[in-house]
Image (cartoon, rainbow, N blue to C red; front, top):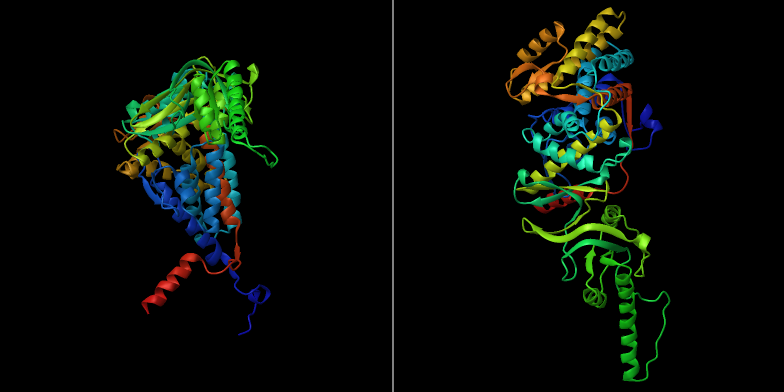
Length: 544
């Protein structure tokens, strides 16, 4: 049959979807599905998801960024929400769940408006007006006096970090916040806006419990020392990126040997050369050699003779971090290091923690180079989840060192925004009014989800929140432990202004982008049949 219409213009195998029902509503449904997955993980009582990725790796987590990263999402509209969550994760490091769930809620409300007969462009215009108003209201809700903070005061840091960490590890936030705050303050540079997240490392060691966790000023390497010397105090360090071994010549050459003596002398000269190099390193004052490559038997023998401790770090990234910790410059090949290139560590020792041999390089006086949080836990998945909570804490520290303003947490901000937006919508004329009202209603999903996840009655809580906010108490939020509404200044639940602002902005942008799409044109996928499809076909043939 001869193709007609748009099919006659496109190549064979193309799919074309257009119109409200086929494109817009389908896109909205895909985004709603995605936000339904992440929504139940929102807040401190959020449920965990068990995700097994294509490499059979198991993730048990309630961190939305990890969940959407590991789900290989194919649908193009849902991918837009994933990109918004990734942008939030990279910008702030927390709030990815709020971004996806809020965008899903906005789209769900947009679907109702579309079914009522509003055009997507009218909804977009209303949503854009609403987000401008939201930014204005958010700035009014900022707690007075929070504009300035001392980023080196542990109390103030923990105060702002608690909510972000509690949403990942509820009940353990005090221990984690204390660890993370100490680690961040140790490595905070003179100008806090230059804080580098990479300077706070995490070492995960099985065994023990969270209360066994500690902080090391310096680095923890999950490897043993190469030689028999396992400990050095106040030592200078030489770093060789290319390895500590006899170097082969650049060009190929042939050596003609006539007698056994010549062969013996040849071996001796090689030995003498290695000894000369190691002796030169020892004379430069270095007591520790760190190698980025292999360590030769002969070189190791002479290192032992000159009482030099040898470490091997095969990862070049770890090697760079070690250079930062010790303040050393890495040499390409074994040679005599100049005094300026040598690093310094207070102590470097091999210790055993929970059955794992680790090398700990401490640098107490070395200022703010690197600090490591040593996490202990009973299983790998618990350790991974603890690491994500620590990452969130560190990212929150970075965000607060740029902008320390805070707004009430525990859904207090969302209810206040919803209430103020509804008042603003009533003053509007035209069709935007409906979209702004729906935008305001979308905020209700936060208290509703928090209450549902904690097993509370959502309708009662939302009603009492609205009553409290109506009478002027803008800081009234949910206390999940008691299942009642309380002032957040009592429960100490505060969110960073930047986290909220970016999450709501990205969610609105993502929702508007999805609503703007009215046609989807998909090409036929390139390449032959996919492996799993081919296997399924093969299995079907065998059964026959």
